[in-house]
Image (cartoon, rainbow, N blue to C red; front, top):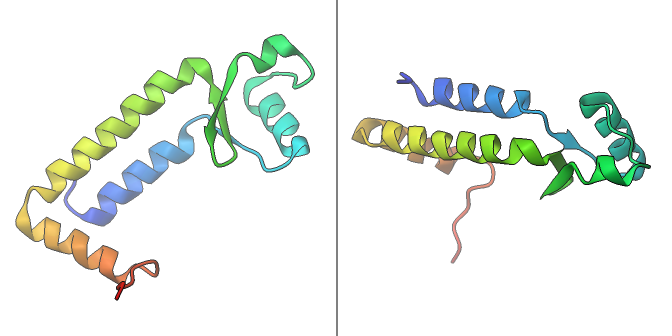
Length: 106
């Protein structure tokens, strides 16, 4: 179990950053990314069939989708368990309230 919200966030962030995802916002980035990360050629249909889009410019191997979703579910479960403690929940709410994206809608 994680002791602080920051420890939990850093652990989850590291796992996501270490996951083999290619982020591409141009054809050149896509071709280079799949070649370097997966050894695939964007000109070969057979290689392209091994990939799937996860949206927002992200691509991964189809074989990695299940482990990726399992990781995200585990992250969600760990966050829920972490926030089950009221003091930690308050810490989480405060963090989100001070986040630059937080605002009131009137």
